[in-house]
Every structure is written in structure tokens, then in C-alpha cells.
Image (cartoon, rainbow, N blue to C red; front, side, top):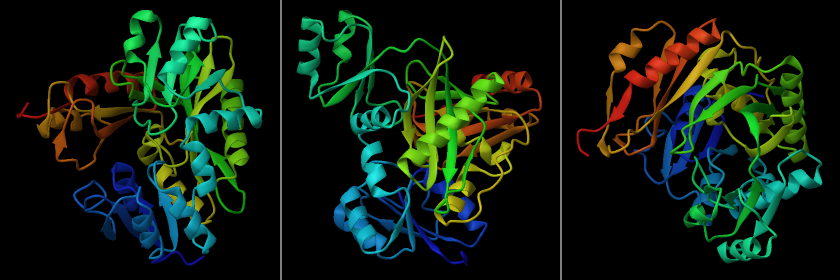
Length: 384
């Protein structure tokens, strides 16, 4: 396939769109981006930015008619337009039918159950009142995790409810509840598949979450898993993307329970926060791999060059307004520190503003440097 000047359309112009456009630029692949404003992160680096809504049928349909291949950086797009474009012959990855399942967490969990893929026990609810009734009649017990079926993203749409005292956290929309899994680690495996059915997986990573924002704060690669668990995690990720029949990337988040079981938590059919370290630490970045997958090219090596720890740069609590990065110079003086800023001009508490990847052959040294970066580099605003 002659990929030079191929027009790849991306629904969403955030940091994932930006990093995908930067990877495409190396191959002279045109990137067209649809989102609300060209001031968004992908605006300055893509070939063409089209202002519009990726949730609007007409905007998505018109945009799709102008590109050769269409992909996403966020699940919550207008899939009716994608299905129509697909019927008219446009190549779309991930497939709209698969996307419809994944963007509804209830359908996603039902899919795992039907395909015999391991996941935590769950129940589906129409609204908050149904959950309250179930608690009263014993059909549901504390503690449990509630997840909004749609529109959850970056930690939003999730509530951990351990007792009656925390019922104020209950969401009223259609949702699912899961048992609170007793896990020892939360890990992720990013897997890629092209149209020829070639499949490769990146090494598993361990994720540490910010307890307030429910966002990944540290991401460690390698995950420090026994060899048999690493193999099982990779096999489970491959089985999942093949069950969906998707082309492109699939980030498979898993729980490793205290008794050694792997359970699928949820998936994302796109480049993902848990793969940002690959830009610096692997032979092929997740963004290049996604392009290889959707353009039906040979998939790249997923081998690590070195161990790494990634730190998400989140807006400091209490700070909203024009962004400043305090401590950046000091961090850049440390060997192996790679800073990636997303180009967002304003910060707010816990907003993702960038990430830092720390490279070191010794994983413990990388962890120590990551803790130091976390203490030194602050995303602040003088206006708050």
C-alpha cells in the first residue's frame, strides 16, 4: 500500500489526536482532525483541522467523505454516521459495530460473558432507584462499584460505594454494578491487530491511580509480574481483540486478583494513556502501531528498549487558569527524563496536561526518579 499522502481522519483533537498526528507526519501521511476548536492539542500539528462535533451525524458524515481511512481518539462519537459511511465503502477502524459495544459498559460486560472472557460479576440497572430497591431487598450488597453505562471517561462515571454512608455518591443514570474486586495489581496490555489478522501485544504495565481523581498517576513497565502471569495477560488481550474482530489498538485493562486470576476490567479501542511510555521506551510507539494497524501495514516490534515509569502531569488542586509548569528545568536536567506537554493553554484541578516518561535500565531507579519528578514538577496557574 502506498501510504504517502493517505488521508487519515481522526475523530477527536485532544492529546491522543496530537500524538497520532505527530507519528503520521514521519511517513508523510495526512491527518485530518474533527473537533470543536483548532485551539485543541491536535490543531497545530495535524494536516487539516475541521471544526465540528464528533457527536453530530452530519459533521461526522461530511468529514468521513473527505478522508481515506477514519479512526478515533475517543469512543463517544456518532456511530450512526460511521455505520452509514461504512456501508458506502469507507474504511473505518475500529469498526462501528465493535465501537457500539465498547462505548456502552453494560453491552461490553455482556460481551465478555457471552465470549467466556473472564470479568468480575456484574448487574445492570436502569437508574439509581433500581439500585436502592435492590439494596433494600438484598439483591445487591455493599461494597460495590457503580459505573455509568455511557459517557464515562478518565475516571468520570465511576463510584466506589462501600456503605450506606457513601450512597450520596450514587449516580442516577443507567449503570452497572460490580463486586469490589480484591486485587493485588491493576495492569494493562495494549494489543494491535491489522486487517490481515496479524496480532502483537506490548508488555504488560502496572497502573497506580490517584485516589482522588481516579486517574493513572504512575505507570510502570515492566509490570513486575511472574512469567506465567505475563504470558496469560498477553494471551487474554489477544483473545479479546480477536473476539471483537477489531483492527487498530485495543487497551485491555485487567485486575490481577490476590489468588492469581486475571479479570478484564474494561477496554478502549484506541491509543491509550497506559501506552504513552512506548513513545520513548519501545521500538514501536503505540501511535505508530495504531497507524500500522489501520493502514494494514506489517506490525512493528513491541520489544522494550529499557524499563520505564510514566507520570501523568495533572493540574494541581486549587489551580485554574493560564498554565505554568513549575520545576520543569530541574526535571529536564535528570538523565532519562522525557517530558511531553499536550499544548493545553489552561489548567484546572486534575486535568491531564502532559506526561513524563522516565527511562532507566533499573526499574527501581526509574521509580525513584518518577517519585522525584512527581514532587518537583507541578502544573499550576497564577490565577486561581
